[in-house]
Image 1 (cartoon, rainbow over the protein chains, first blue to last red):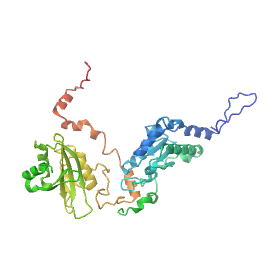
Image 2: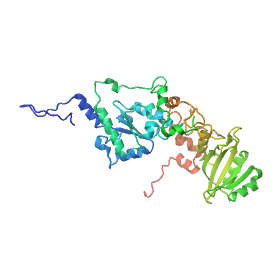
Image 3: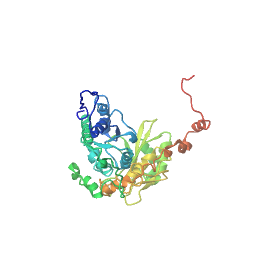
Length: 201
Length: 206
């Protein structure tokens, strides 16, 4: 890594010096050992599996071990649409993950509800859990997900240990919501083709 | 036309309504809701009909509000390789209630729960009539009814709030699916083997 591997040889001393900012070192190790917690509900999960398998192989980016327990996971990847019935489940999984933790919303449905603008579907998982990276696509190709992972690497490498707020837990408020109601309504508003659904309320 | 229809007419008379061959070649027969249990039992138990398999139970509501709701039963005779579709009409202005056929085909249990969940049709005599797809505290109504707005009745924020308040473990526990509860429905010889504590034999182990 550019920032970390700057070695300086001081005359007469041992050459085994490694000088780095603590932030760079910590972020470098965090970014390169992201253990994903797959939350696969639909066709995006197929692309997620392809990303994990040998041809695309996200182990190359330090994601070798998929954590099928939230207690050992760093990044929650929501791959697929999220029905309302699963909203408390993904919230519980997110709450169970220890800090530091990040969330990737994979695909159109996880990010916005996609084509499922109906009574049963959460219109974007950001109404339920905070999201760091949105990967568009229906479903995104493995390259798309890998690009999202690399964007997350970039984001992690920009974080600072001194910024304690980054690691604050934000449980649901007294209304049982993550965001104010009007903000959820605004996020969930129909767009694109959905606005032409004349028979909906 | 499936010959079972004529046999039904000969046996039950006016309880059997119109019958027709649908576009896929299957016979559809309308029956009166009051006689449903007797008709279904007869179709299952009479040797020359022997519809021993209930493929699906579903319901239809038409756009025309005057038309009644239909509950549809897809029957199949595995031995005779024959299908029959039985329909019951329910008047929208009256109570949407119909006899459950779980006593005849145990597989009707979840199918009828789904029809109840989506259409609000109550099945008399069902052992466990709860919602199955939507969660049990779902308060917006019956999603597949024509008067149900596509996006639901509540605002998105209210929907998210109610969804996050579900306790997913409250009603669908493993205990519910445990074999202990299903014990009395097991075949006699299996009960006997369980009583003796027999663990079964590994094939070719001798």
